[in-house]
Length: 265
Image (cartoon, rainbow, N blue to C red; front, side, top):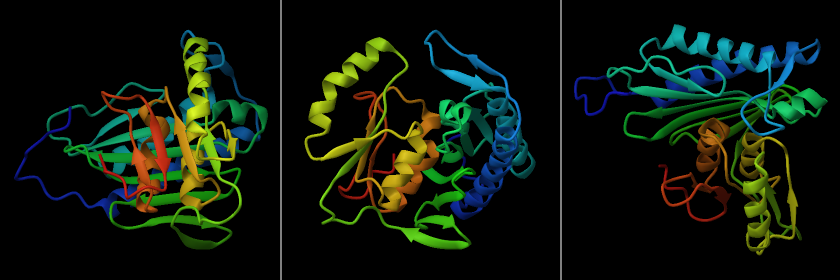
């Protein structure tokens, strides 16, 4: 567990955390890029059919953790595929890793997948996030109060969310592996679509959230996500000026829209 209220601890620099997040995410994305060119083993995890994991997921998480542990050895690390590490009172920062968001896409040769690395401090403030999509050659990144950015085609540009007046409003969404939860999500879809004209499912929550920051989508909503699915991308969306709702005791929903700037929980 991360330490709290340590007045002697040095201030955490969100810009420094972003540098670590980017380096770590690039390291994981290199594993994905190499894995996509070769053979990989696919298995099902958990009790729900379709929740896939590959040996590339695990190798990529090892690569991401290696960077973080070398740069910030006292931090706590949590991820989708490996047990938590560094759980001690001295930890000022916890890292949330999705080494391969969009595993099913990866196994089918669909290019919407990414390595995602987010950082949260002991007070629960999300400080930095990096989402690297190697097959799309896109790197999304942001740190607290530093704006949201996209590196693509040798250029870096600031992200400010969707523009209005384009004649259509697109909602990004996704569905659970659980048939029971999917049934609930289907019932909720009509209400969620009330302010939109069409929907898109990317198969990667992180890339869908980043697409709202980029302006390709106008909003995003999904339930039954793990923290690693949204941790990094939510920072990017907030820094693009979007309203971000993270799951909490009252609701399991992750939502991104064009309301006032997020609460930064």
